Image (tube, rainbow, N blue to C red; front, top):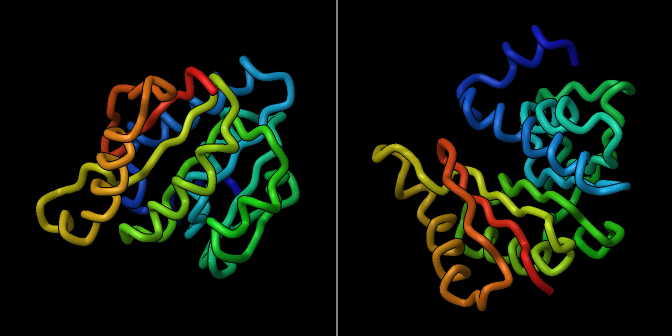
Length: 179
């Protein structure tokens, strides 16, 4: 996908500060790990995949969605392994370890909790799991309440294995610091 195509396709789904965070975080992961594996749950139009690939050109990049993504133009240069299916169930199909997981699929409490529970154990120490739409505008807050609930419950359950990173835009992210 060309930069012009991507910019016109992604709309307001991922704001510029979140795009830059994805790119920079992917670059950080690629610099830190020898053979990084990055997972993008919820492809939609491919904006997050573009950012992740831009930051980590050598990483193994998975894009997972319940249906083949609408409008996502994934050319051969993107080198994305697209998996169509339930993202929580697909965790078994992705090799360990995983170094970065971006969760932006099913926004219901059950969907976010299932993704969190399936993917967090696969993340290597030093890796990151990030959730999109944790913080949202008042007009859509009810629609995304499940994300916030699943994240806050998980924070209460942690015993120093995960470090909360500073929020960026609507993103909430955690770095694994211990097994």
